Image (cartoon, rainbow, N blue to C red):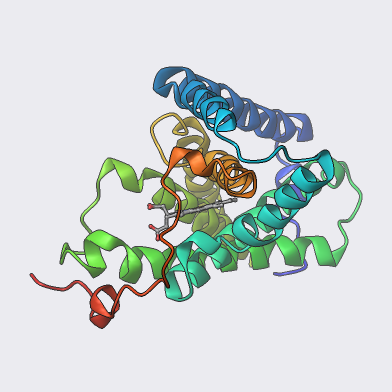
Length: 263
Ligand code: HEM
């Protein structure tokens, strides 16, 4: 199953151009919805206004080399390892889900655009597609069942669903139904294969069509905010926050003593 390209088999039933068209529509939905979200929330206007204001209180002018170094360090550390989640399960689950999704998307685009016209996809690409989906499921279900704050700290049952769960659930549905579709198709279980294909298509429509209402766009906003924060620290403006106290950072054990489970 891991060396099997489900899109190639799909292209025997529907024209390959329609699969490519579907991907382009999904990408356009992300761009359009994120732009609408930025207009609606005015977050980018706030972001640039704040950055301009902070620049006035900068203690030093950063050279292009220094700025590039700060950006590269932020990409390699804060963004690539989602360092803001600290050390522990939450960060590990996120890293699994994030890289799983990136692998799944990149492999999907390569498989659809290069290998649905009759040529055989290299096995490493189909393996990346399946492994990406599995990693997303591992990170996502771990987060969903055990790590979500409303479940782990507020005692809500795992099956309580709110609008904020749209993103993680749609993401999980895409990976799960994608894997199930590939499995059923590979084993010639025709009825199930079509059922999972339809569910896979619906989950993609929900994931990419729901960007405006879901947390999807955090994958663009978070990196931007991390870069701005680190630049503001490097030039001394600190986002107009007070300077750190001239004393060691000792906060006591308070917040680390026990998990919040007082319900
Ligand atoms: C392909 C890229 C990414 C994917 C698929 C992804 C996926 C997710 C998912 C599924 C959640 C849980 C959402 C929820 O609260 O229901 C989440 C939360 C979060 N993400 Fe991402 N993310 C991505 C990129 C990023 C990046 C680049 C950053 C930071 C630089 C980031 C930072 C966060 C943070 C801080 C949370 C909150 C985590 C928590 O409450 O435990 N994410 N992400």
